[in-house]
Image (spheres, one colour):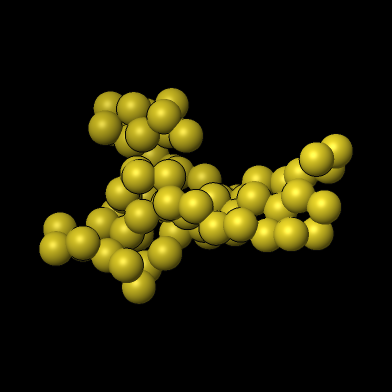
Amino acid sequence: MKNFKVNLYLRCSKSNKNGEAPIYMRITGNGQPAHVCSGIYINENYWNSTKGCIKGTKEEIEIKRERL
């Protein structure tokens, strides 16, 4: 696979009982998309949908950002 692209997005329809949604990765290689759950859950308020990244400065948020 020569060319690939990774986009991150929040999948709010799969929220857990704590109100946190999973971060999914859309990996596209040679025109073929694959959607994979990162295993990281975050509150919707800490997600920047325009940039596709976690926003905020809390320690918990920083740890999740490093895992991505």
